[in-house]
Image 1 (spheres, rainbow, N blue to C red):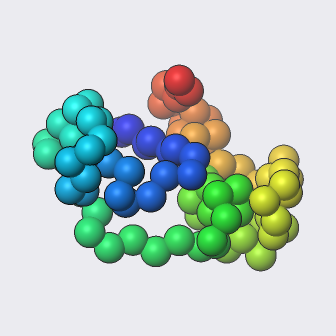
Image 2 (image 1 turned 90 degrees about the vertical axis):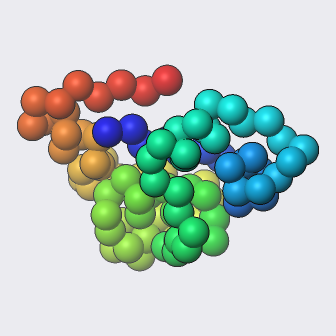
Length: 93
């Protein structure tokens, strides 16, 4: 399982979504052999609250991450933490 998060990236910022001026060969290859989303919804319009929602599976209101500078409270387990506790190797690059 590979979960890639980037900061301040939009659909036009990848070659696999049709941008001929950007060269993203590794992500393009990954998209070709895997899943490429054509529709996607976000829980928030800011990156930090949106990531908090993705990592916890909760609404940004329920984890108290309402602003760009809000830290995720430690009381909420994240997807990688749950995987690690269940025997999966979890790494961050």
